[in-house]
Length: 210
Image (tube, rainbow, N blue to C red; front, side, top):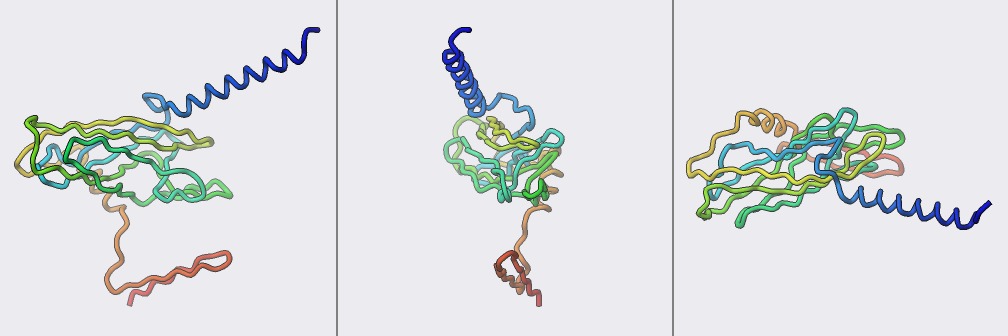
């Protein structure tokens, strides 16, 4: 009959090894994420020294999969970006377009499906190095979900030349940047005011427009 305790210990060891391998796979995201593809793009085709310009993280999502808004709702986690920029460059905060309501009762989340462009302002230094181009790099981490959620990570890069003249817009991305800006939150008109009241099981939002 053999040793049942020995067989039990062997099965436990096998399960432990499988769990450790699975955990390693979650930490080390694949080079080409299977459910989302991301590209770093620029609104303009060159960089003028000492200027502000806009780039975007373009997510293309597999059908029925989504990523999350900055306020994800009941669950989830928004994408995180770690910039690796040339000396003297700096990045501003991500601008988040209006999300979709993602319902999975009893949970309600907010995020994006199909594709989305997350905008970020970059600032170039007045003094540029001898080389005539800059390589912009970033590491992006995000949670992509359908019936399950998977953490993914990708390194992106974009090289743009320096030019003293005002830059031209990239015709491939101009409409996408304009369309995304139309979906960004706006400040209330001057003279408007808003208050919110939290009660036991509801919020009451009051807006006075005059």
